Length: 116
Picture 1 (tube, rainbow, N blue to C red):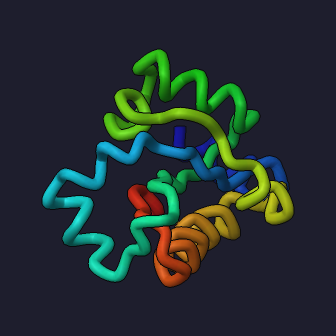
Picture 2: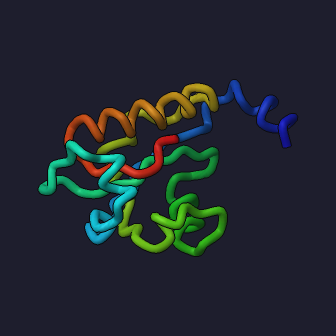
């Protein structure tokens, strides 16, 4: 597997994505701890990265295949306006952008999960 990551790492076929989550995730202590400066008027989101088509990755989350429990249970829809302009990118760029995008959205008041 590491060989394939190395082989494809320089190709620009990776993407970051943002999923709208149901607002009921705001009730969890972990969510509050990660988002103390959140704006309750802004949505809850999950930030991730993938080498797949973003729509396919979202379907995998919702079906429970290699999914985040947050997206599997609370995922509503993709929010392309928050990420499409950033894609595609290399693996290394996507790893960094996932973190940067999560931090940016959190600083703008979004309640953010993911973005490791």
